[in-house]
Length: 143
Image 1 (cartoon, one colour):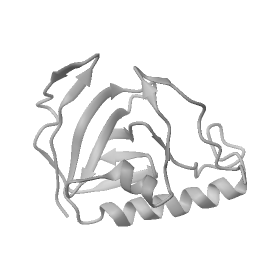
Image 2: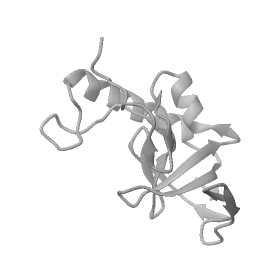
Image 3: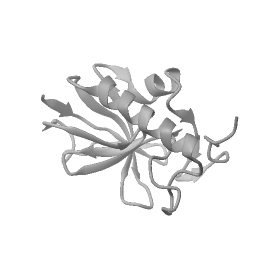
């Protein structure tokens, strides 16, 4: 499978192109969980969305309950299936987060990946501005 990447960057209202990302072709996409992963060696996180965690309850940053962990694996499987064999593009680059991942809007064959995940119930809206959350992180353990 061949995935092409192009990018534009928007930081503080300015738009600049990033030639090191633009027009790069990737042969794989790896999902760490349903809102982050890697395109080749490029680590990314989907902007303004949250997915349930797949990490152990004992792990820092892991799931808060077993139900969240189960939802996390379902969400990851959805994203793997949704993006398999599709042309993936970075539509917008918001810069790096505190973990060094590029925060991006992704499209798969022209459709917004984050919106598709949210519409399917696997992602939730988690708005940010300039790297700061504008709302509490979604609670995947709430009934």
